[in-house]
Image (cartoon, rainbow, N blue to C red; front, side, top):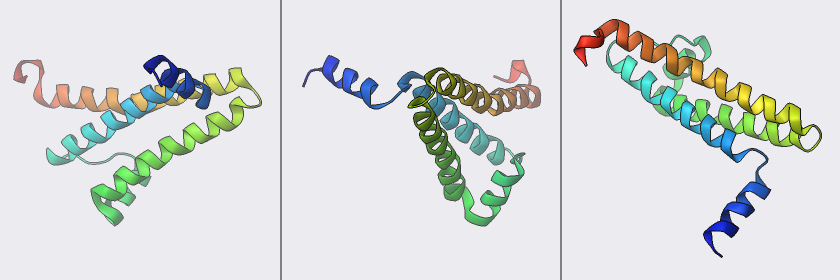
Length: 118
C-alpha cells in the first residue's frame, strides 16, 4: 500500500484527522508546559487535574489528559455520523479550548522570567 492510499484510508477512518492531530499536539504541549511549571515551583490550576496529580502523580495526569482527548475524539466521531458540520465545529472548539492552557502557561513563563531571560 502506497503512502497516498494509507492517508486516504486514515481520512476515511477518521472524520477530522487534521483537527485531531492539532488536538493531540496542543494537549501534549499542555502536559509538557504543566510539567515545566511544576518543576519551576508552580502549580496545576485545574482543580480536577490538580487532584489527579496529587492522587496518582504525573503518570495519572498523563492518563487523565489523554483520556479526555480520546473522549473528545470519540464524541466527535459519533456526532459526525449524524451531523457532520456540528461535529467539525466541536472538533475545532476542542482544539481552541485545549490551546488556552498552553497560551496561559507560555504567558506565565514569559512573565516569570521576562523576555530578556530567554
